[in-house]
Image (cartoon, rainbow over all chains, first blue to last red; front, side):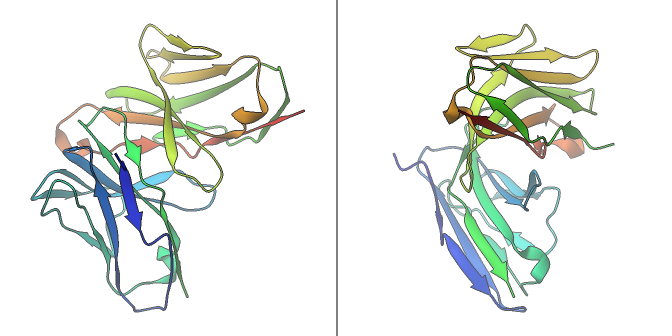
Length: 112
Length: 114
């Protein structure tokens, strides 16, 4: 099992560009999450999904979009990148809401 | 008041020391509690769940005090490899606007030195 994989590992964007952060899990988890982590700060929930076709906003959803067409994949879309979106993005999955979350290795994004 | 608050540290302790971290939470309806460990520039990984009766895993002991709304993590006989950031995580009961909203503390930095 690869667990949770994320691509790319690093990315530099210019202001106004867009990109998609990929996340895939092979544990057949229904629940998937996207977090961002700013330096010295805790993780903030951006979006989450409770199953294919079902997504909902977390704490900081502005500037992002998600989709969940399959159980395995949960891509995060950034439209019109802004410097405030410079952060480390983690994808995670879990078997159910209050279970252990398994995290991907993260994507380090810089917006200049 | 933040939903989950931790002392950010850093805690600098010698090998073999005992160190304790506390974490307070504001939502009395919180359901589940965890400690995660995050190494530098790595993803968080579950260290242990926190049960109402308290639980121990080797050198690590976690306790929950619902009345005072805090959880604690005790590390005995610290090792160099314990150096990391320890994240307190609180999850709400299901349903309502808090559904799915897992709340992480900002983390407590621990450095164990020789």
